[in-house]
Length: 331
Ligand code: P6P
Image 1 (cartoon, helix red, strand yellow):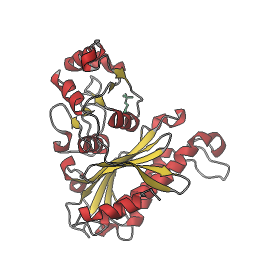
Image 2 (cartoon, rainbow, N blue to C red):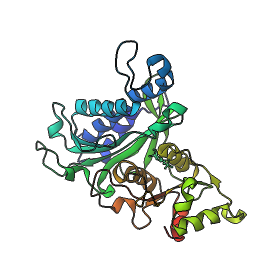
Image 3 (cartoon, protein in one colour):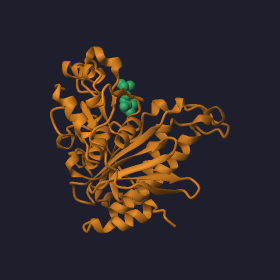
């Protein structure tokens, strides 16, 4: 049997973490369980006419919840059950949530999570995703977690990654020793290692940006977008524009094929639109772990000191040479 399940892989890699007595392994297990449950829900999303539109009451008389609420509640349930996480900062909640599981207060870790990023794409069947990052808590186990536990720099990450609910469901994560991808095999209900040791190409042909905002971009971005459209075989140009509007989908394609994802500051979003804690740090961490780069234009994304949970930052991330090219025009 040539498959390696997520569980087998985690155990095999456990010796990479002498300090973790299995806690990190159990956290990754709990994330995998939640991801499988959300995948099942997302795949039913097209059936809301039968199951009931979100916000309505279905034939069983139950409230039909929006999928991102279901996603959020699924992670809270899985992580409270697992007991290793003491608090969760979620894109779905204004404030940090101290978890209430029987053992949560003694948990040594915290998680920042966007349970269902790009959820506005669900009803048009576009791939969406979960994005997560895990940190050691800075407060003492057994005490009440505080904001300081979740407002940590990306350089403090112990594990981060994403789940993409697309033509197949994949879990892609890193614990600081490279990036590995697992594809869910629904016939056995297991994530199986399908993309070992992912390295993102230094160069690619695809750029991802919402050019609808072109009237508000900084001059350097406008110059870059002119450059990518010029014809020059030697530098692989013109590039192809690829923008789905669901970051996990855009990021995942660029990670595997080579490409750059750009969300610059605009007039209506002077700090950019994407959230530091829930999108930019975890995805930037994966890009860097896969040999790419991730920056706000002024700082490596992993060095940005978060000051508030829903803070937004501009971001350029992906293939190393392409990120450096964007920044060379000024950002
Ligand atoms: P825009 C989805 O809402 C999201 O947070 C990311 O998944 C996506 O990359 C971005 O916003 C799209 O934003 O402004 O281009 O529609």
